[in-house]
Image (tube, rainbow, N blue to C red):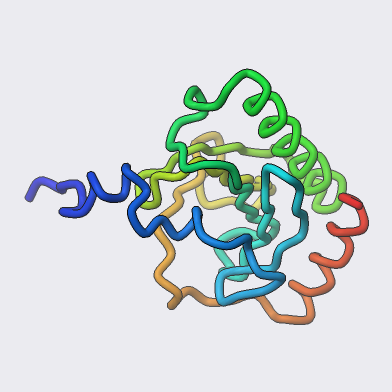
Length: 157
């Protein structure tokens, strides 16, 4: 069987009902805790126990899919913010390596997946094997997640 793009792919590209274009990320929701907010991004530490420290950095300007759709000024600001979050994640979690994945194959809105990589890892030396989340994933313990978020907010302050 050959996999196909979703039937509503063209609507997703156009930003119709884009879940990342709506309101700013809440302080907390089923997917994660916002650890940083600026004029151009929201950074959300993920609840799913996919990888400790897994964070999305979401572009909060107009609907764009690819980084090259940003003006030079917007791109500079976006990537500065991505790097700021990445640096805080690296300082706190002390991973062997940080990964920055810009995908958008499920939600075509500019966002980066920041993934600390550790000694115990599902794919050493390869890209992190991300799958779309559906809400049924195991979650990190609330106390651990809240503690991590508090320290990351301090580092990003």
